[in-house]
Length: 188
Image (cartoon, rainbow, N blue to C red):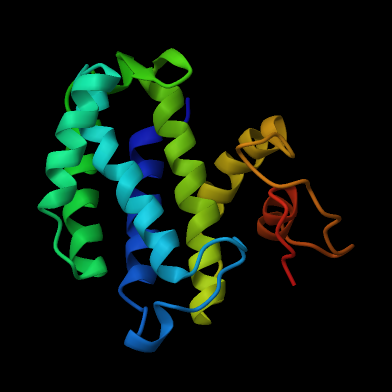
């Protein structure tokens, strides 16, 4: 079985490394997500990771929403510091004994926590790539993250609200480029 915890932590670390490479001038740079600049992209991941702890602890959407709103008011205005804080909290929440065996309440209804964490990994991978491209970091993402995300992306490719319509990857595309093409991104 896939080690979701290890993949989650790798995804968090990879995304965080890119957040820490954003220069002051790059926060307004465009990203492969046409509607988001770098700040909005990072804020999207911050928001998702603010939600993860209360949902993983068994809170319903209403109760989790109240916790999230309070947490957002206390976030550091420095995006890298805010990311570090929410990444630590979300990592701790998935590391709790039995966390992956729980059910979480999502907008689509009760879902296995392991599926939720898997979706979070895919989001970290895809948006980590987006962030890298936006700030000029072209380091490949770890192969185990790509290997995990590829079949999940294939299962929802072109399905709103997950991803834009897939594009054709280059003939000699790497697995990472194939993944990004599935999500509607032009890998080159």
